[in-house]
Length: 231
Image 1 (cartoon, rainbow, N blue to C red):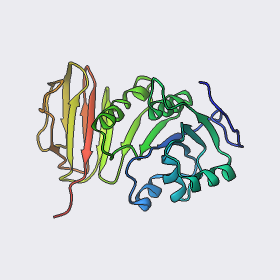
Image 2: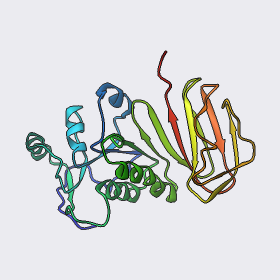
Image 3: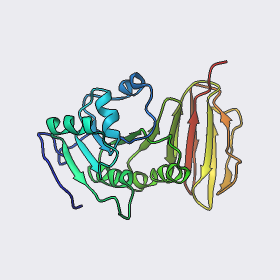
Image 4: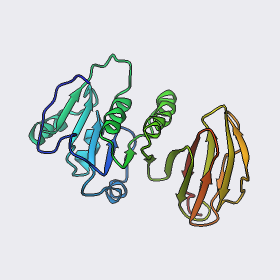
Protein backbone atom coordinates (compact mmCIF):
# COMPACT_ATOMS: atom_id res chain seq x y z
CA UNK A 1 0.00 0.00 0.00
CA UNK A 2 1.61 3.23 -1.09
CA UNK A 3 1.76 6.29 1.11
CA UNK A 4 3.77 8.68 3.20
CA UNK A 5 5.11 6.99 6.32
CA UNK A 6 6.30 8.54 9.55
CA UNK A 7 7.56 5.86 11.89
CA UNK A 8 7.60 6.09 15.66
CA UNK A 9 8.54 3.53 18.28
CA UNK A 10 5.40 1.47 17.77
CA UNK A 11 4.81 0.18 14.26
CA UNK A 12 2.22 -1.97 12.58
CA UNK A 13 4.83 -4.74 12.36
CA UNK A 14 4.49 -5.41 16.10
CA UNK A 15 1.94 -8.05 17.14
CA UNK A 16 -1.18 -6.58 18.72
CA UNK A 17 -4.12 -8.11 20.56
CA UNK A 18 -6.73 -5.64 19.37
CA UNK A 19 -6.93 -2.88 16.78
CA UNK A 20 -9.31 0.01 17.47
CA UNK A 21 -10.37 2.06 14.45
CA UNK A 22 -11.71 5.54 15.18
CA UNK A 23 -13.63 7.22 12.35
CA UNK A 24 -15.28 10.64 12.02
CA UNK A 25 -18.84 9.68 12.99
CA UNK A 26 -20.68 10.56 16.18
CA UNK A 27 -18.63 10.19 19.38
CA UNK A 28 -20.49 12.25 21.94
CA UNK A 29 -19.87 10.52 25.27
CA UNK A 30 -16.09 10.39 25.54
CA UNK A 31 -16.21 8.62 28.92
CA UNK A 32 -18.17 5.75 27.37
CA UNK A 33 -15.55 5.19 24.67
CA UNK A 34 -12.59 5.59 27.00
CA UNK A 35 -14.01 2.78 29.13
CA UNK A 36 -13.99 0.52 26.06
CA UNK A 37 -10.30 1.05 25.40
CA UNK A 38 -7.34 -0.93 26.72
CA UNK A 39 -3.75 0.10 27.34
CA UNK A 40 -2.43 -2.26 24.66
CA UNK A 41 -4.89 -1.30 21.91
CA UNK A 42 -3.37 -0.25 18.59
CA UNK A 43 -5.23 2.90 17.54
CA UNK A 44 -5.90 3.60 13.87
CA UNK A 45 -7.59 6.94 13.18
CA UNK A 46 -9.42 7.60 9.93
CA UNK A 47 -9.21 11.25 8.88
CA UNK A 48 -11.37 13.31 11.25
CA UNK A 49 -11.41 10.42 13.69
CA UNK A 50 -8.03 11.81 14.69
CA UNK A 51 -9.80 14.81 16.21
CA UNK A 52 -11.98 12.47 18.28
CA UNK A 53 -8.90 10.63 19.56
CA UNK A 54 -7.11 13.82 20.52
CA UNK A 55 -10.22 15.15 22.29
CA UNK A 56 -10.23 11.96 24.39
CA UNK A 57 -6.56 12.38 25.25
CA UNK A 58 -5.46 9.48 23.04
CA UNK A 59 -2.35 9.24 20.88
CA UNK A 60 -3.01 7.58 17.50
CA UNK A 61 -0.57 4.89 16.44
CA UNK A 62 -1.55 5.25 12.78
CA UNK A 63 -3.54 7.81 10.79
CA UNK A 64 -5.03 6.85 7.42
CA UNK A 65 -6.71 8.97 4.77
CA UNK A 66 -6.42 12.18 2.82
CA UNK A 67 -6.66 14.17 6.09
CA UNK A 68 -9.43 16.30 4.58
CA UNK A 69 -11.41 16.31 7.84
CA UNK A 70 -8.55 17.29 10.14
CA UNK A 71 -8.76 20.68 11.87
CA UNK A 72 -5.64 22.87 11.79
CA UNK A 73 -5.22 22.74 15.58
CA UNK A 74 -5.27 18.94 15.42
CA UNK A 75 -2.69 18.99 12.64
CA UNK A 76 -0.30 20.81 14.96
CA UNK A 77 -0.78 18.20 17.68
CA UNK A 78 -0.17 15.39 15.21
CA UNK A 79 3.13 16.92 14.15
CA UNK A 80 4.22 16.80 17.79
CA UNK A 81 3.00 13.22 18.40
CA UNK A 82 4.60 11.85 15.19
CA UNK A 83 2.32 8.85 14.61
CA UNK A 84 2.67 6.63 11.58
CA UNK A 85 0.86 8.26 8.68
CA UNK A 86 -0.50 6.84 5.43
CA UNK A 87 -1.92 9.44 3.08
CA UNK A 88 -4.33 8.62 0.29
CA UNK A 89 -5.74 10.95 -2.38
CA UNK A 90 -9.35 12.07 -2.19
CA UNK A 91 -10.11 10.33 -5.50
CA UNK A 92 -9.66 6.58 -4.96
CA UNK A 93 -11.41 3.23 -5.36
CA UNK A 94 -11.90 2.55 -1.64
CA UNK A 95 -13.16 4.63 1.26
CA UNK A 96 -10.69 5.68 3.93
CA UNK A 97 -12.46 3.38 6.39
CA UNK A 98 -12.06 0.39 4.09
CA UNK A 99 -8.36 1.20 3.71
CA UNK A 100 -8.06 1.36 7.50
CA UNK A 101 -9.79 -2.01 7.88
CA UNK A 102 -7.47 -3.51 5.25
CA UNK A 103 -4.51 -2.23 7.24
CA UNK A 104 -5.94 -3.65 10.48
CA UNK A 105 -6.58 -7.07 8.90
CA UNK A 106 -2.98 -7.18 7.62
CA UNK A 107 -1.84 -6.87 11.24
CA UNK A 108 -3.71 -10.10 12.13
CA UNK A 109 -5.04 -8.94 15.50
CA UNK A 110 -7.27 -11.07 17.72
CA UNK A 111 -10.07 -8.53 17.38
CA UNK A 112 -11.03 -5.25 15.69
CA UNK A 113 -13.21 -2.65 17.41
CA UNK A 114 -14.67 0.18 15.32
CA UNK A 115 -15.99 3.40 16.86
CA UNK A 116 -17.11 6.69 15.33
CA UNK A 117 -18.66 4.70 12.49
CA UNK A 118 -22.34 5.63 12.86
CA UNK A 119 -24.04 9.00 12.45
CA UNK A 120 -23.78 11.58 9.70
CA UNK A 121 -26.17 12.51 6.92
CA UNK A 122 -25.17 10.00 4.21
CA UNK A 123 -27.27 6.82 4.04
CA UNK A 124 -24.95 5.38 1.39
CA UNK A 125 -21.92 5.80 3.64
CA UNK A 126 -23.79 4.29 6.61
CA UNK A 127 -24.79 1.22 4.58
CA UNK A 128 -21.29 0.76 3.19
CA UNK A 129 -19.77 1.01 6.67
CA UNK A 130 -21.92 -1.87 7.92
CA UNK A 131 -20.95 -4.04 4.95
CA UNK A 132 -17.26 -3.43 5.67
CA UNK A 133 -17.58 -5.75 8.68
CA UNK A 134 -17.44 -8.58 6.14
CA UNK A 135 -13.77 -7.84 5.40
CA UNK A 136 -12.33 -8.91 8.77
CA UNK A 137 -14.87 -11.75 8.92
CA UNK A 138 -13.43 -13.22 5.71
CA UNK A 139 -10.03 -13.30 7.42
CA UNK A 140 -11.41 -14.94 10.56
CA UNK A 141 -11.01 -11.82 12.70
CA UNK A 142 -13.92 -10.86 14.99
CA UNK A 143 -14.96 -7.24 14.46
CA UNK A 144 -17.61 -5.05 16.08
CA UNK A 145 -19.02 -1.58 15.49
CA UNK A 146 -19.93 -0.03 18.84
CA UNK A 147 -21.51 3.23 19.88
CA UNK A 148 -23.39 4.35 22.99
CA UNK A 149 -26.49 2.37 22.02
CA UNK A 150 -25.52 -0.14 19.33
CA UNK A 151 -23.29 -3.16 18.89
CA UNK A 152 -23.05 -4.55 15.36
CA UNK A 153 -21.27 -7.66 14.11
CA UNK A 154 -21.26 -10.26 11.35
CA UNK A 155 -22.05 -13.87 12.29
CA UNK A 156 -20.80 -16.70 10.09
CA UNK A 157 -21.08 -19.58 12.55
CA UNK A 158 -22.13 -18.68 16.08
CA UNK A 159 -21.92 -15.74 18.45
CA UNK A 160 -22.81 -14.68 21.97
CA UNK A 161 -24.46 -11.27 22.31
CA UNK A 162 -24.34 -9.67 25.74
CA UNK A 163 -26.74 -7.02 26.97
CA UNK A 164 -29.65 -6.73 29.34
CA UNK A 165 -33.21 -8.07 29.22
CA UNK A 166 -35.31 -5.90 26.93
CA UNK A 167 -32.48 -4.91 24.60
CA UNK A 168 -33.34 -5.36 20.92
CA UNK A 169 -31.52 -7.75 18.61
CA UNK A 170 -32.10 -7.74 14.86
CA UNK A 171 -30.69 -10.35 12.50
CA UNK A 172 -30.42 -9.73 8.75
CA UNK A 173 -29.19 -12.19 6.15
CA UNK A 174 -26.27 -10.95 4.08
CA UNK A 175 -26.58 -14.00 1.83
CA UNK A 176 -29.46 -14.87 -0.48
CA UNK A 177 -30.47 -17.24 2.30
CA UNK A 178 -28.93 -17.93 5.70
CA UNK A 179 -29.88 -21.42 6.81
CA UNK A 180 -30.35 -23.25 10.09
CA UNK A 181 -30.64 -20.17 12.28
CA UNK A 182 -30.96 -21.09 15.96
CA UNK A 183 -31.23 -18.59 18.81
CA UNK A 184 -31.43 -18.83 22.60
CA UNK A 185 -32.09 -16.15 25.18
CA UNK A 186 -34.47 -14.22 22.93
CA UNK A 187 -38.18 -13.44 23.31
CA UNK A 188 -38.98 -14.91 19.90
CA UNK A 189 -36.64 -17.89 19.43
CA UNK A 190 -35.64 -19.08 15.99
CA UNK A 191 -35.31 -22.84 15.64
CA UNK A 192 -33.57 -24.11 12.53
CA UNK A 193 -35.13 -21.34 10.44
CA UNK A 194 -33.95 -19.80 7.20
CA UNK A 195 -33.62 -16.03 6.91
CA UNK A 196 -33.73 -14.57 3.41
CA UNK A 197 -32.01 -11.46 2.16
CA UNK A 198 -34.37 -8.44 2.37
CA UNK A 199 -36.71 -10.19 4.84
CA UNK A 200 -37.61 -8.55 8.17
CA UNK A 201 -38.20 -11.93 9.86
CA UNK A 202 -35.28 -11.29 12.21
CA UNK A 203 -36.11 -7.66 12.97
CA UNK A 204 -36.52 -6.31 16.52
CA UNK A 205 -36.28 -9.44 18.63
CA UNK A 206 -35.59 -8.92 22.35
CA UNK A 207 -33.16 -10.33 24.89
CA UNK A 208 -34.82 -12.06 27.85
CA UNK A 209 -31.49 -12.80 29.57
CA UNK A 210 -28.18 -10.99 29.91
CA UNK A 211 -26.83 -12.92 26.94
CA UNK A 212 -28.21 -14.48 23.80
CA UNK A 213 -26.68 -17.02 21.44
CA UNK A 214 -27.06 -17.17 17.68
CA UNK A 215 -25.97 -20.13 15.56
CA UNK A 216 -26.24 -20.67 11.82
CA UNK A 217 -25.48 -23.59 9.51
CA UNK A 218 -24.92 -21.65 6.28
CA UNK A 219 -24.84 -18.11 4.97
CA UNK A 220 -24.01 -14.92 6.84
CA UNK A 221 -25.88 -12.69 9.28
CA UNK A 222 -25.59 -9.06 10.24
CA UNK A 223 -26.50 -8.75 13.93
CA UNK A 224 -27.48 -5.39 15.42
CA UNK A 225 -28.06 -5.08 19.18
CA UNK A 226 -29.82 -1.90 20.30
CA UNK A 227 -29.91 -0.94 23.98
CA UNK A 228 -33.44 -0.30 25.16
CA UNK A 229 -33.80 3.22 26.51
CA UNK A 230 -35.08 3.55 30.08
CA UNK A 231 -38.74 4.32 30.60
